[in-house]
Length: 255
Length: 255
DNA sequence: CTATCTTTGTGCACGTGTTCACAAAGACAT
DNA sequence: ATGTCTTTGTGAACACGTGCACAAAGATAG
Image 1 (cartoon, rainbow over the protein chains, first blue to last red):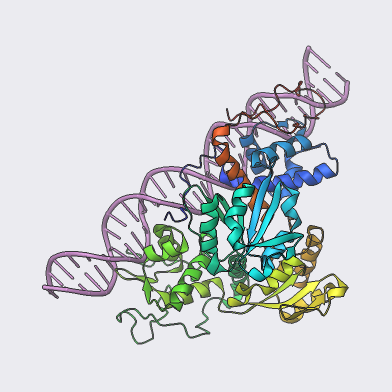
Image 2 (image 1 turned 180 degrees about the vertical axis):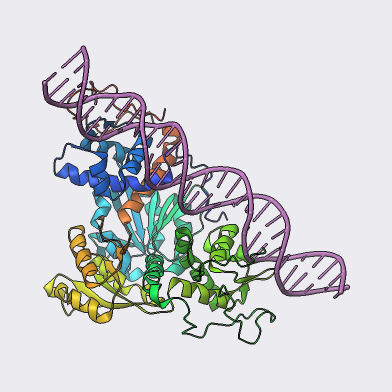
């Protein structure tokens, strides 16, 4: 069982760095907004500001796609929208299934950004038989038993998992077996998939914890770290040596 | 190593790499699971597998926190849970407000992972007066007018924005003005905030686009990239030179 | 106490991503 | 045409993150 190999061997992704790929959707969004305002061209400086990155980075990112700018002028908005869309594969239709129609699944099904760009919700799937047939966001929920058929019939290659953590791996396995090769996982679990299958995870809890870390740093400026220990810190329950009476417990204090 | 007294600044926690911080919640989750199964100790190899990372990385990550392991044995689960929790600031209570109680906001309010670790939903806020008073996840929704008071009264420092894109920046500004210094943004917009305020974004649409990119690469293996252009590629509408008929258009080929 | 065995902690090399800073490309005015 | 002015595209330096490989720490057995 090939665990989610974290390392990308060589990212056969001919050339374009992963970090750049991750920013392309950001540029695309900014460009789309400009396009709607009928702005004909934009400089790297302006576009970078709109996308929240620095202009040198943006230019380098674009340079991986090709030379689409005009020196002295900037980039043609429409042209760039097309090129980035194409590079991201958004010029084709991507049928997507959402598995797990709870609060989150329903919210995803209703999310407009889905359909806005090439993505089409082909089906909503849930394990609860009581939900079968109930329309969510105008799409009737189907039972998990139909999963394989749905994926096969619709040629679905992207699956979204919004089930409870406990069911995620199993759903993942079934999706993969049915032919899905890209998974967006909202369940708080590490999924293991065979090589060739991409998994991206979105984890609210993790994001909050990262914020808490920085938040603590900010407020901890004055509180220093001499705080003894509010809650009784568990004592090392190792085999038994090392831990001493209890005076050296938090041992770590760098002296 | 004969570290002698190279001890880092009194704050041993200074300088934890961002990449490490982002993984701590992952380790914490794996450790919590082990703890619930009453597993006393775990080796870097086992824990790494559970967290989906490689063991060397895990050990290096932990080394930034201090020497919490025992050579020849591994790490004490309970002790490590405590240390990581503390490092992440999860030993204290973080009141959080969620602004924008649409489908997504409601899903977030109901999300269990929220309360599970130090985070407490202090209030739900929405601009729709009709929602005021309606309980969502057992918490009555309050009107946006109350935002400043709520943040102030509860000492909220973390805000979650799940409003439509158009309202996000405004809500963000108000949150920041009211004292919030960390924001988790679900709206598909780039937020601009003053220095000292952290923003993390969760963007479904972007994740899907990244998946589509890789998906296209996979299926494009055979199709090569010689595909001319399915949809009429917009012609460069620059001032007028360079663009030629349409022969040199896609010009990009990796080269 | 000594030997052996396991697993941590980390120096080092390598790869990826970011930023600077500037030459070259082209627009535009004269 | 020629010169000036703007903005791109990119080489090179730097910063950051990753993974290998191994010595040192400690457990454990004899």
